[in-house]
Image (cartoon, rainbow, N blue to C red; front, side, top):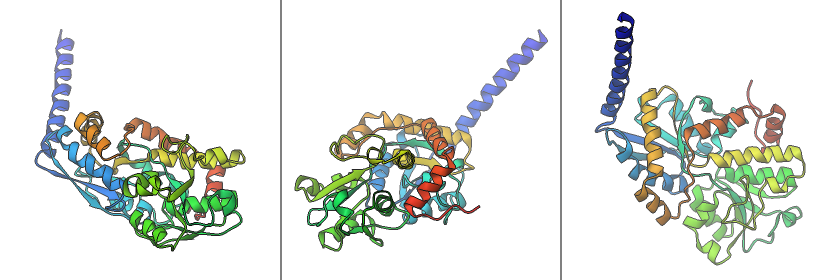
Length: 343
């Protein structure tokens, strides 16, 4: 009898402790402002996704806080990732989204990385991202085969960005002669460089063309010649993927790493050190937002693809990269022109 009463007491106590913790977290968020750090330009598609999330997610968060957005673009997302690890508050009042290449790049190069993606707490992913390389309609080169014989300039933002990594990878794997010019500011800078004739092509996400320059598609001003992902994107049915063009098993494994990077897409995370109960509240709120009819309607209105993934799937995806064959990682570093990880 005494044992039964003790057991009942312990169960009730545990329930009250959990309930108290949840109430405490709800009280923490009540009246607060949560900051969403976007590791990309204010004018790109990462910001577009973040703005829609910031508008609809608060009503699903216990305490109904406000979400504001701050941009910390640069260095291929590393500036934001470094900030989140070293300077951001760890109380749940700040979360982030960085370029999809950041998680994979940590295992390829330690350059300027002052964070550990393995310690991140994933919240969720709004959609995978398809990067492409396209050639301007005035380019003397209009295919990969022609690019093996003739050099043309390709616009890129920086050496840590997919806009540089992809054409560099294509050069090294397929023998093309793309001359990659860095230093352009965001998608707008890439587009302007093509329109002014400074370069004859550019990369970045295909969505950035659909949203920012739809006339490129309707007027056939740009020709996509290759894209990432495990399968062809429905909006690019005639454009081959890296994996399709792999010449051997080694190349295929490298291109699969690129496809994993693409799958990370629009993923949001908390840095290490945030209390577990607050992480759960944000994960639950994210999942609820992805099913919110008003949210879905706005995503469709803004032509933003929605194909969400949960935190469990993201953790499993990262595990694949972490467990990748060291030989494949070494070959990928060489192909992308990145320096070896520091030991």
